[in-house]
Image (cartoon, rainbow, N blue to C red; front, side, top):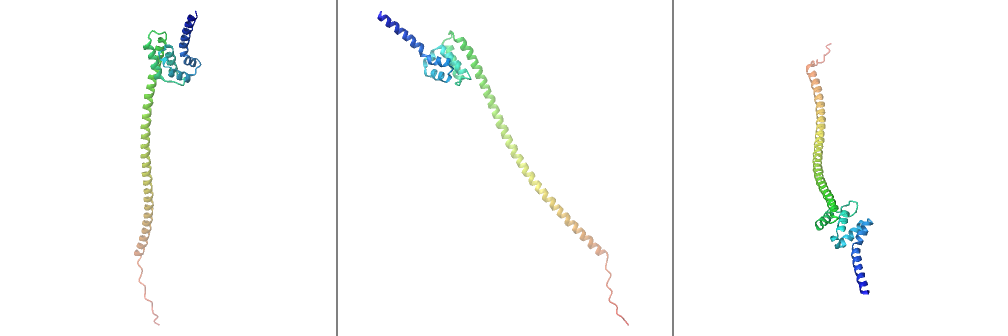
Length: 193
């Protein structure tokens, strides 16, 4: 009986040890300690052969609020579960979750493409804005130069008009002198007395 009892104890110990193998991962999942669950899952390669653990890990990595969000890893683990155990009681839920993950990945890729396109458009518009600003600055500089030249020419024109007016006055005075001849001066008269 003692040998039988020892055999039963050994069997129970083996079963208990097998059940405890995944205990930290499952406990961390239950406690919502996502980072610890991630560490435990990565540390225990036996979990890659456990359908329930694969589903839980797929949920863990596909949840944006978990802090260990990794859609690619979730897809890999869920696909592993579905291909490894297509008749598993977890495969239907894994298939639904995988469809959600695939949809999220497509949306992410689409958003990334849209962001890239927008970033390229912003870069293009920024470049065009710089070119236009440079052109505007150049035009302003030319305009300022032309304005200074125009101001200088207007000042020269006023000066020339003043000189012309002064010359016209001088000419008019000279003409007046020329038109009014002077009578010759009479010699002084002598007194003949």
